Amino acid sequence: MHPNAFLIYNLLLIVIFSIIVNSNNSFTLVYISFYCFFHFLIIYLGIYYYRSSLYIIFFLYGLGLDILWLNEIGPHLVVFISMLFFFKLSIKYWYNLNSYKVYFAIIILQIIMISLEIFFSYFLFQYSVNLNYFLQIFFMSILLSLPTFSFFIYIDKIK
Image (cartoon, rainbow, N blue to C red; front, side, top):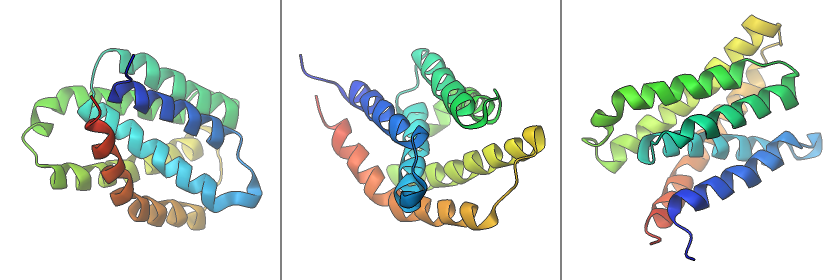
């Protein structure tokens, strides 16, 4: 059996999810890198591999992040499922964009997605907003985006 790209992406999600929920404060930069990679992958799957099974996948990861980090159900679950609905409504427009436009859209969506998670965490559970942490995520998202996108294009070529 040869793994297809969708299976490889889901295996990557499992590994990265395991890493980010078991974060160590000594390796903050590594943790932030995986957190950014995780969000980039979630968006990439929603755009290029949209299918009904993603609702279950996004639900489980959103629920898992919320329960393991916040002991509450909320920000990640709401944002992940909302983004998936957004992808469903806009799927026909994504096919008309070239890869460069999709790449920039993913970066913008990633920043919006993480911002919404932080906002909902503050609004729903009064978690403090750490601007330094957000800026680290912002810059790491931009720094890692091109190598990540290139890596995903390589995976997409696997038949």
